[in-house]
Image (cartoon, rainbow, N blue to C red; front, side, top):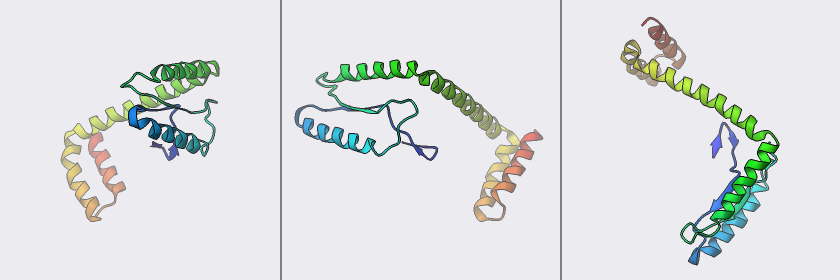
Amino acid sequence: MLKGGDMEIADVIAINKADGENIKTAKIAKTEFQRALHLFQPKDNEWTTKVLTCSALENIGIEDIWKMDQEYVIKTKRSRYFKENRQQQNKSWLLQHIQGLLTDDFKQNKKVSKLLPKLQHEVMLGSTSPFIAAKKLMQAYKTF
């Protein structure tokens, strides 16, 4: 998953459907993931991503995933990474929520909702710049 220009890697990768004729393919996938993970920088939390196979259908490997999850929590709590990461997540969620609320309020403003389509069209035609259009929308929003 790409996030903010950086590659974000999972802490545990579980390859499901490792049953029946899929066992061989699942093992190959596990090996390929393990090889690929060596290309990435070590994580700040000092945890090495683990790759497991499982079968939800046959209930195989599910307990191993749970144990791995618990091992991760214990290790990251011991190193304070868990708490520090959660604090950063909470801060990020706060800012994202504020941004969403502000965006919703901005779009629901009567002057803005009336002016926005016209300015979008002008921006698309190149008759006004996105920055001038944004400034006009903010002025309309502030005078409501």
